[in-house]
Image (cartoon, rainbow, N blue to C red; front, side):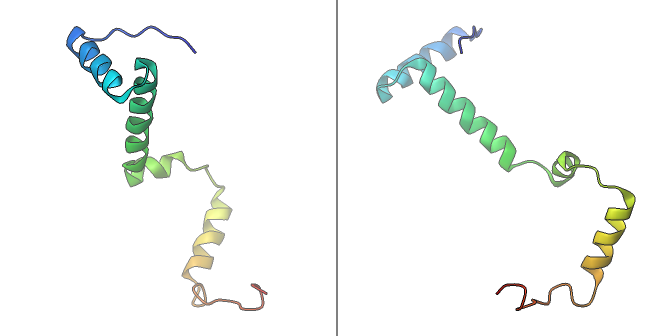
Length: 83
């Protein structure tokens, strides 16, 4: 996909020089940089923000889930289930 970006002149020159040093086109350097930035943001997503991305559950489902997690045997492994 093609797009147009407005970059500061100094940033463009530094990016172009870095791409040349790495022996790759400027576009590829930009793609890699954007991928790294987006991955970093994703990895640092705060818990509250992450929770907002989860699908909404009906109240009954939340109640059932809470009951299951709080059950005394929640961490117990059913060996028969894993056979």
